[in-house]
Length: 116
Length: 117
Image (tube, rainbow over all chains, first blue to last red; front, side, top):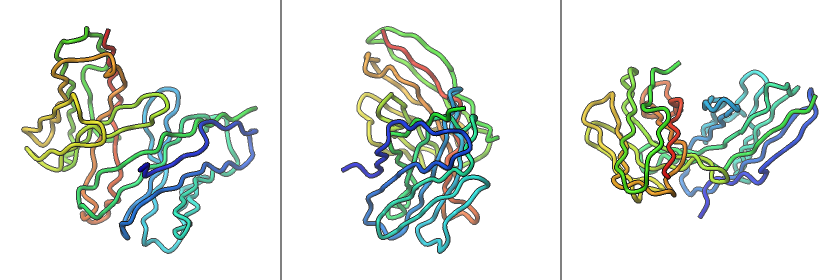
């Protein structure tokens, strides 16, 4: 079964608008971590934000916030005031703590295009 | 930036030949991973290591083997490359979540593009 689902293969958004990238996950582990990574056209993987399953508040990092809805098993990334440089591939990922091996599984990604 | 280097960065080879990709880190992180990235599939975990000589299989391990004889080096070997192994390969490292202050965040190398003809 797919553990991480990103249902939006591609998105087009006008510059300066807010963007929500969807991510749902599946786990029976009560302890886990959720990550978002950005991959620009240059190819490097850039860590954006992290949310632990026991964190009480949604994570925020500058213009990035993670809308964590535990009961719905969703961890959407919100980018406020989008910029042209936000055009990239975005990956949601999850670490399950049950096995104590810390491996991280990724979704298939969403390609975001910011329009001027 | 985390000190992770992958070599070679680009390689073209023929079906049936052996290929070894090297990942070298200078961060002394305990965990190391190999992922492959293909369009429409995101990143898929091939193998990972949680210590010297301790490795395990990921989601797509068939046709790949790994070795980790030193903390800093993690080798990915394709014993007999096939066209389906044409991909971009990423190495990543992390510290255990149990380490104070660690989220288990992955730090990535720059990727190695492998083409199997």
